[in-house]
Image 1 (cartoon, rainbow, N blue to C red):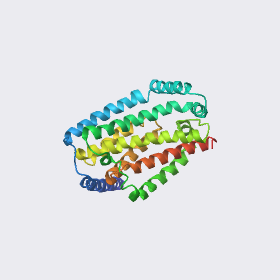
Image 2: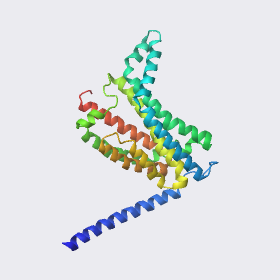
Image 3: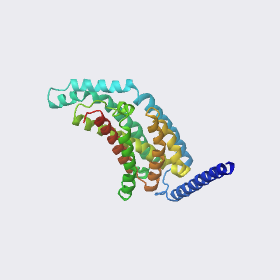
Length: 283
């Protein structure tokens, strides 16, 4: 019995060691393929320090400002005042009808500013580099489209299975009770804008700025804060963020584009929302 257990443990360790070695070799290949030449006026150390500090500040702003009810209420109230001062007409009626979206608009706009606008301005005016070096070029996306489709299929199946649970239906969509199809489409547009900004921050700005200093370890440095922003989500989704972060980070480094991650994120998010609404009988 002892020999059998020892052999079983030994085999598991050898399998894990072999897998780790294969992954390590694959990551080293990625290190050899940076995709672009280093062109910043900052040293690699200086850029890494700047990115780490700025990222910490931006994530703090996200948590204490953008996600705060006070900020969202202020923006929503301001929009209400603007709409109220408009002349009567179809536009005013339409904007009044989507008033429940105002707070979510504030959230999406805040995410766009923190995750995209500030990092993009930093790249352009501080690092003085083109944004395409940080994953915004679509080149490479179509070539690897099959990979993204293969990644989406199992996630979509998992979403379909989980959509039956009460916790899932209580969580999604964030815009809990859309009044109609147009309402729902507007919400998904705001949702996808946020995902674009999110992908740019984690898989564009963070990874492509740090790859020159950390190599493939930039992926794992990114995964820690990426997982942490999911702590308020369901447990399995937070765990899944670790795997998703590694895979999407790997693809971003390998393809030099974030658009695959953007498309997957948006497709999965829309699938989750639709699945939840179908289970609740809204659709």
